[in-house]
Image 1 (spheres, one colour):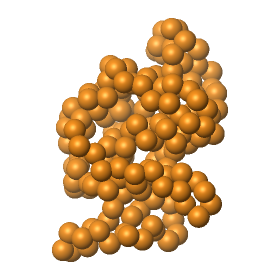
Image 2 (cartoon, rainbow, N blue to C red):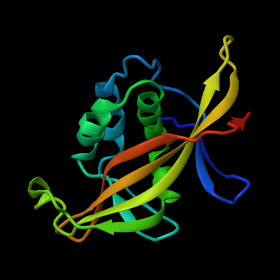
Image 3 (cartoon, one colour):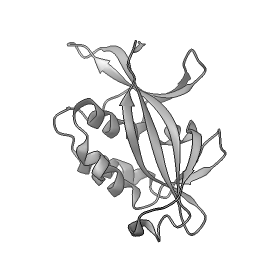
Image 4 (cartoon, rainbow, N blue to C red):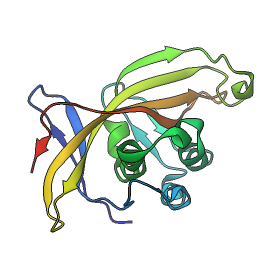
Length: 174
């Protein structure tokens, strides 16, 4: 699984993952089954957030939740394409995750798998925009939240990436 991903810092020294390829094309219909297959390569791995030093595991439930969550089903257009393509930078998105915050588990359905509550981390990424001759014209910048469950075994498991927002203003130039 070849990936073309870099971590860069913006002018405010905020880290961002630059994903240089679009592998899930189209804004009308994302093949979420293909995204899920891609994510299965990460199951069993763990990555460390450098800001918090938290080790975040990728459990077997992650690919299905990521591609089939209620949040994902509501996404359309650019945001759906962004969520599908951010999977290429998953290790780096966890690595630069910042601003950890806690929330208690309030839903009965998560009583067993998020017994110790939830954590949210902010992360940031950029995706290329191509011109009519398929050259990279610029990069659109997005913010997202890593939703992490704190399981009964004491480990942190990535559950989903939510609240994806495209930043307004000047895009990152090539």
